[in-house]
Length: 216
Image (cartoon, rainbow, N blue to C red; front, side, top):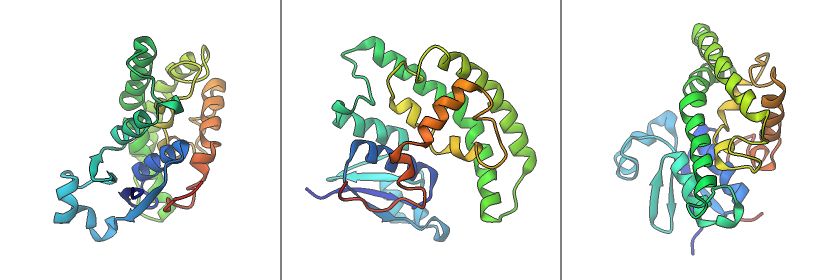
């Protein structure tokens, strides 16, 4: 069987999210580079696989799937021994996971992704909107008050076991936590959780960009 193909860009946020989970699961994969700067993600060939023209998507032996969180759920479901995705056979654990995943998507991602994009522009030397950064970090800071309350009672967002819901915060958490921004570290329990996430070998493996990984 051919290795899974990950169609994306080496440093794109959602490509790295999927690659991090692939490494957590130790799944061999081939990165198929998509040059978004040249608009390859809007080509007819790409749109045939991903109709929204967004990266990444995967091709797992002919099974094509897009949306990074859906991809991660699929991969973890194929490898249930990893424990990153509680099964419906344990409805309470599964519900707590879905609750935590919803928290990330509804309360963390909207502000973190907007601020993160502007922060990334600074790194790239592009014109950026500081007002957006300030506004979105302020919103995120309020949301993290609830995170602090949750993480004061348990190690991770869905309980005391790491799940995809925690990993979904990568890569935007490190973006908003970069430089002099202390939004991810000013509260002790959020800081503990955040520092553990960004110290995971799966995250650190692709700090210079995602690359084909066929052996671990």
